[in-house]
Image (cartoon, rainbow, N blue to C red; front, side):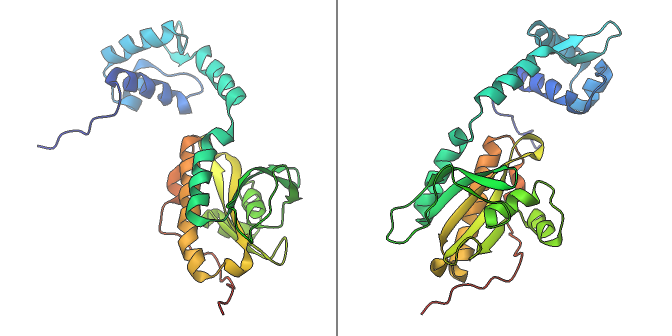
Amino acid sequence: MATKKEEPGVAAVNRALSILLAFEKSVEGMTLAEISTATGLYHSTILRLCESLEHAGFINRLDDGRFMLGATPFYLGMLYQETFRIWDYAAPVLRMLVRDTKETVAIYIREGNDRICLHRMVQPRAVRMHVREGERVELDKGAAGKVLLAFSGEKGERFDIIRQSYYSVSLSERGSEAAAIACPIFGPKQKLICSISLGMPVFRFDRKIFKEFLPKVMEAAAAITKKCGGDHSVFLPPYRHIAKVKFASKK
């Protein structure tokens, strides 16, 4: 007889969290029966847990018997916004990506029609990409910019392709010697936060390097997205090849 896979942590806490998450699609509140349907919990269990949740301000029970979210989740959300720093989640991932590729990694955010390098890590090499934190670049040039445009709703076939594949590649767009692979980073509800870019001199960007590095960038994007509360499954293989790329020829 197959046994049900146990959830990590404390069972009672997991049940209470499932009740809170059930309110995700409820604007008008939920009845006891609706919560039971959404969570699979017994009425008696829901009532016990809701008593604790109501005491802590996570939910309110109205006079007509419906339950609604209380003020505490809103307060915690405000605290999260105030304390959120992408660097806290991205730093160890960027460090590993630099170690594995020996190239330059950067995080870009959108500001108007530009993108700004928020963070970057580099590997000491004789020839490498020079990216400075705080540097402002045109949004329509480079893989990172196109990712930010695509997942901000920019229309056009090339942006549709990026949205389908979850990455972009650029060759000699900002300069004649630069190449990059970039992916989006998502937060809750798949809201775009930033883009992660792996940059290198174009002479090192051949077909072999592309096939080796694309999974590493996708895995980095997945790791940061997961930490930020987004759906990281969009970065799982198999990876879609979005276009024919003219790679550097090795002499």
